[in-house]
Image (cartoon, rainbow, N blue to C red; front, side, top):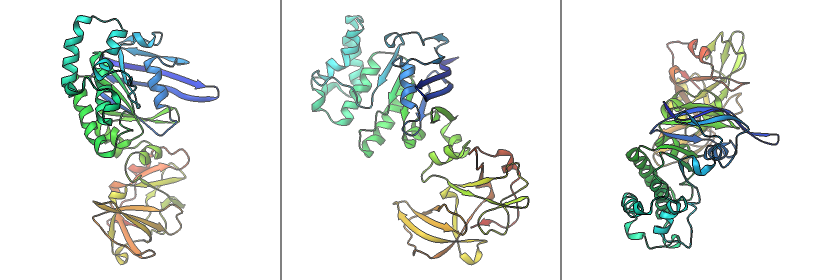
Length: 367
């Protein structure tokens, strides 16, 4: 039985459709990330689940019980906000207990629950401090503790790490994931950061312009993107998308002699290649060559940007370590046919059938 289920949720602001027929289910105790760019509907969806917004159509169920008609206070869920939403004039202790007092819960349980949560969140020595006396990471722990102390099984988090520096975000990702597993919470985590979603979530709901682009595990989303949008949103650098040109019944990339695919159903195709799946070869051994535009040293690897003949979009290649290249120099590139993705150029959708008929030959494809 799904713990949380959304069925055909639609929400519009005038002519702007913020949520377009959203349906998904989250099993109990799972971590689900709502991922997407700004304006895709993530926060509107989170607010609709919380009851802060009302859906125009559709129904929300928690343990098979409809809750769209319930006010936020009766939805039995906790929320952690991007800004932490701590009361600046209250101590950590008072911030943690505020929700319990506001809901009129049993005062006799306060001391035990406070002790349990402050130990869990490592806040025991900070209970008498005010938020202004805490670091960003400590404030985030207080916000998490306030959600945990409520003992609700569903927790909604709205980009809770965006105000922290990179090192602290990394440690807090581990802490939040460990806390979610330890307590068995069902967690919906709103983020625009693919690293957070990929490293923390059991499944990712990728949103695009108010609709679900793809709902899958991090592994499946990366290795089997359903569209150009998914392919380029997941992965760093984004997947290379290169238009193919058609001659007869075959589709070619740039000046390659061997076709990429023969007799596909789609008349206009684009080739998808991950930067890390492309390797450098001597130009003399390559079927096609490319000219170096620029390169960026990233520490563990170098990103090489190349220009292909008759192709407008640049091609990015990830090579290990620090490597230097001269602008305008000639390089040969190759990849395995099994690492190619095909997409319909007009719709952006993945062409699974065309991939099954990929042209194969003994020579390795190269550009």
